[in-house]
Length: 246
Image 1 (tube, rainbow, N blue to C red):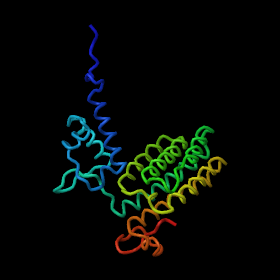
Image 2: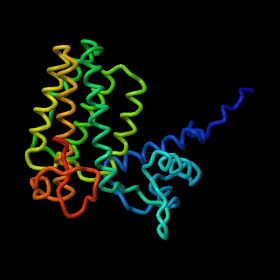
Image 3: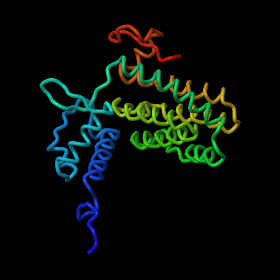
Image 4: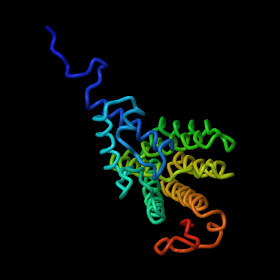
């Protein structure tokens, strides 16, 4: 008689169900279906996913370890919210790491990987597209850039930052004209990589993230705050403009 394989009749063991729950909840956060500050109840998430509470509990623990969930007094588990300083720190790290990734891609990307980046540019949906579609396309571009750097430790760190970006809420690409500007910035990065110019690639990637940071500030504080002039990112955030990084 054949031995059992330890899996359920559906072919999924407890570990795989937990992985599925984790992936689906993480996707819901990234898509904005679960929003920062929203309370998360284990039993409701189990019903939402049509799963038992055990794999959902495992998934929630992983999401908490990732920093995507946090415990709030009197409210319980909620989707994490980033304060102003955390947002500034996130973009500062993105500038450093994505600049490094672009420079490494200019050195190490294969012809096929460069072609993938160029293909993604060709399929850009344009400024009139739905913001969610624009955001998905943008994640595709940056993911391809990260992989083209050929550094597993950098890739892992960038993916952690990308997860944290899901906590920012509305995409900056929803701002009028931001998608077109981002396209030009992506074009500069890809062109430098095609030319195997690491210095230009890093500079273009850093400029792109600084531009994205300024767009984020416009969303957080309104157009006037971004136009009010430079300021440091180390002091109090409320009631004045903050630096967009250049």
